Amino acid sequence: MAKLGPAHYSPYPAAIYEGVLNPPYGKALLFDEVVDKEVAMREAAKAMLTRENATIFPGPLVLYAWNEEATKKAKLVKEMAEVLNARIIPMYDYRPKYPAVNPEVEINPNHPNLTIWHNNIKACIFIGVHDHYAEVALKIIRAETDCLTISMDTYSGHEDAMITIRSAEIEDLERFIEIAKEVKKELGLA
Image (cartoon, rainbow, N blue to C red):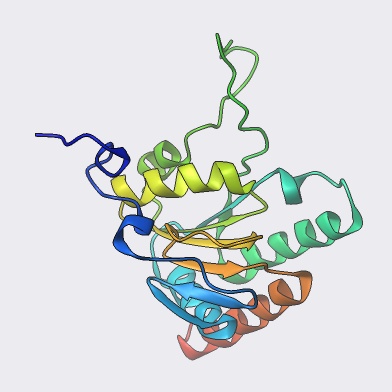
């Protein structure tokens, strides 16, 4: 029997209800443990290089050239995908299209959990996705898939991501790419 309350809307309670909190500025979260960013980056690279159908989900904060930083991050996302042999599935517009969607005119990419199910994605990176949308999507993904989720480029981090790199700046993304290259060599995949 379902119990009343936000934790019981999903069969799997949100991480915050399990005591997982976002990491402090300059740190990262590896499952439920606060760690240095480089430790989390190494584990993220391993997951992306070894799990099936690794995919990067870039959002509007890196897809649109609205400032110089976004343009640079978009180029780094492309380089990251090449190093990780990962697909890129953009989440360019996830505004609700209610009351109706015309599927012949537009695609409604509001449900990354469905994309993950249908593409059998076992590891993914959210980058440049607005925090309010990522919060909901990561909770659904965590509750309903076996995909290892990695969140980068967020202001406060996401406790429902398996790995969250808080406040990832351009330098952090560049460092992640270098770490991914190292891990790729270590795994004999280079």
